Amino acid sequence: MNQFASFREFYPFYLGEHRNRTCRRLHFAGSSLALGFVLLAALHGNAWWLLAALLSGYAFAWVGHFFFEKNRPATFKHPFYSFAGDWVMFKDIFVGKIPF
Image (cartoon, rainbow, N blue to C red; front, side):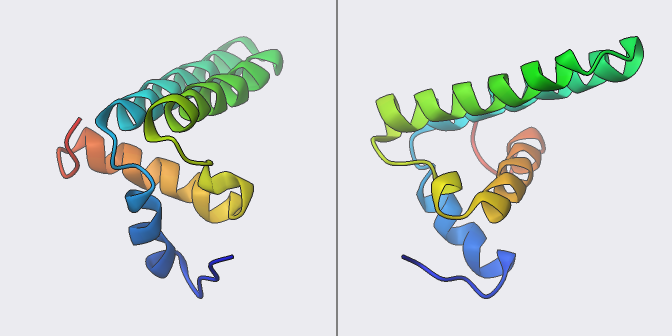
């Protein structure tokens, strides 16, 4: 199992696990839906939307990994760094640093 001393060390590994464009697009879609569901939870004061956020984020990402990337999601071995990586990659895609 890879050990990383910092997120800075982990992120290049994380990006290597997301070479497939469809996988990245699914991550982006799932993260976008998750943000929308978090907003709905805040607006309506209904915590069930947070469950929808969690499910949408992971469901889209895992479909990308299992069917397109053909690897196991990094979240299984590195849950905290992987969660942070999702959002850094989301930002990098959003600003055009990583191709959508």
